[in-house]
Length: 259
Image 1 (cartoon, rainbow, N blue to C red):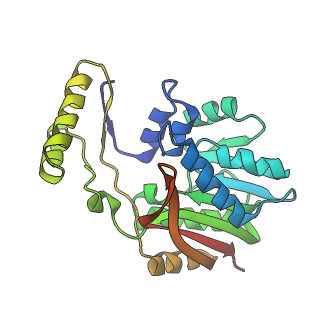
Image 2 (spheres, rainbow, N blue to C red):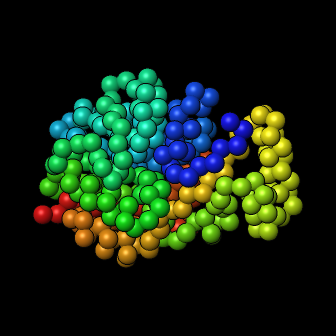
C-alpha cells in the first residue's frame, strides 16, 4: 500500500497499529516520541492525582503509557481505542490494563463508572462541534459526580491552516501545496517520497481529515452545556528536543462533573 488515503482518524490509527510500527506510534507523537509522552503524562497525572480507590479512564489512550503509570497507584485503569488492531497491540504491550474498543462519542462504559478521566489530544480529531459535543456528553455520562476530568490539547485555531498542513488526498495536490506554501526544498522532499511510494519503497500518507478547534471561552461554554464544570485551563506545554515549549494554539482544561 504505497499511497494511503486517509479520511478519518480511525483509519490513521489503524494504520499505526500495524506490526511495522512500535507501540509509541499509537500516541500520535511518532515512534520516537516517548520522552514527550512521559513528560505530558507526568503533567496529566499530577493534575488528576489518581489513587487506589479510583477508576481511571483514558479516552484515546495512545500507547497506554499514562495508564501504566496510573496503575502503579493501585487504581483500576481502562483505556478506550477506536480499533480492534489498537486493542490487540496494547493488550500485548501493556499487560494488566483493560483496553476496550469504542469511540469517544459512544463510550463502552456504564454511567457514573469513572472517577478520573483523561481525553488528551483526541477531541481535535473529531473534526466538528457536533462530534465533540457528543463526546463531551459521553464523558459526562460515564463520570461520577465530582470526577476530575482532563481534556487536553484542544487547539484554539485551525492548526492545519496556521502550519500550512496539506489536507487532501491527491499527490498532485500535495506537491502543489508544498511548492506554494513551503518552497523548493520541502517540495523536492515530497517529490522524492511520491517517487519512492510509486515503487513501493515507502508509504505516502494523504490525509484529508479536518480538526476541531475552539478558543477557550467557546470550548468552556460547550463543555458546560454537557454537564462539565471548569476548574482551570492553561496553554499546553510539550517536550521538544529536551526543552519545554509552550504550544502556539493548544490548551489543556481541567473540569469536574457537575450535578
